[in-house]
Structure formats: C-alpha cells, structure tokens
Image (cartoon, rainbow, N blue to C red; front, side, top):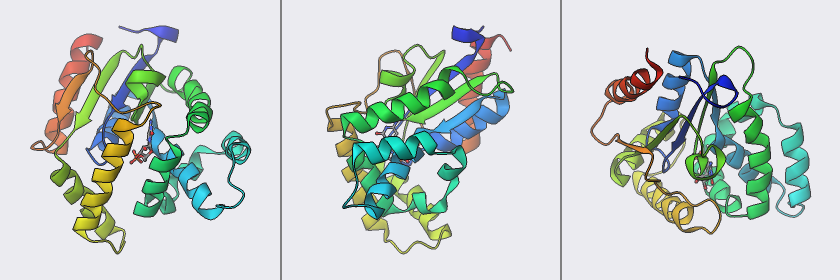
Length: 218
Ligand code: C5P
C-alpha cells in the first residue's frame, strides 16, 4: 500500500530520549526509507544562537538553513545538553519553525530517489509536518528511564553531567515542548502509542514492524 507521490511516509513524535531516533533508524534501514532527525535541525539553530548571541536573527537562520548540508547534522557538538536547551528555546519561535518546516517538507514528500519513502521524527511531525503520514507513531517512556538512557549516552561521549541534571533538563524540555504555543508536542488520536519504558530496542522494533508489515501487505 502506497500513498501520496507513491511513497511510504512514517511520522514519529516523542518527548526527548524516548528511543524514537533509534526506532526511526531501524525503520529506515529495514524498509529503505530516508531518515530525517528533525531535532538535529533545531539543535543546529540552537548552537548557532549560542555561538552568535549578538547577531542571531531570523535572517541569519534563513541564510544558514538554506546553505545547510545534511552532513552538518552529524556534528557531535549538537549532542550536548547546552545545545538541547538552546534548541528547545529557539523551537518556540514561529518564524524559526516555519523556516525548518520549509526545509523538511521536501525530504518528507520527495526523498532522494533511491529510497522508498521517508521517516521523520520530532515533536510536531504528526500534528503539523506530515499530517497525512501512512504510519503515525507516538513513542514515549517514563521520565526516569529517559534520563537514565540519556545519561548513559552522555557518559559514552565523555560529557560531564550528573544524572540529576539530565533529569532536570529533560523535565524542563518536556514542559517547554508540550506547553509552547506553536507546534506543541501532543499525541493525536490517530497515532499508535509505543511505550518503550519496559521494552528493549529489539522488542520495540518488532512491535512496529508487525504493525507496518500488516498494512504494507509484506
Ligand atoms: O529531539 P531532540 O531532543 O534532538 O530535539 C531538540 C529540541 O528541538 C526539542 O526539545 C524541541 O524543543 C525541538 N524540536 C521541535 N520540533 C521538532 C523536533 C525538535 O520543536 N520536530
């Protein structure tokens, strides 16, 4: 079964560190779909703000995004807690969200030819970006588990941050992302809830795969 432009579209919304990125990657590899981690774009802009506090403007964001290559999103510097908080701050701005949406749209509906479709994950993918997605997943997990997973990731990256500060930061971002005026994170009625609190990566993917295979008649 295929839809708009004859491609498979998967939209995932989730709070931070719930495992959405991991699942999105597994989905993209298994079904040969183009994967875009939209949080990385807000992080890129968040870092831009941290580096250029005095000259930061919508114009600067527009210019940088129009010249941005996808490889820029692989920069490890985007993974810090400081950048995540700055990303959540810039993500509240309507104009910035519009700039990011324009950039994302082409990847959602016209991914590079070698792919059968796209997977996008973020906070407003189902609610705003790919409202007509063929598959809609809301992935979540308890705050404590998310903090533990993110803390372990930071440890591997040699980032000096305590578990408590990770927990506080996630709690702050949850609140900001859910309560902001534009593109707030929320679960729509038509999206499938996947709670990863007690699920391994493998078990979680198995669940998603069985849902997708059924609809795709695989
Ligand atoms: O997913 P990640 O933690 O990398 O996202 C960083 C921040 O970017 C989020 O806390 C959120 O404020 C913002 N974001 C957003 N909309 C998206 C993706 C991320 O507002 N689609």
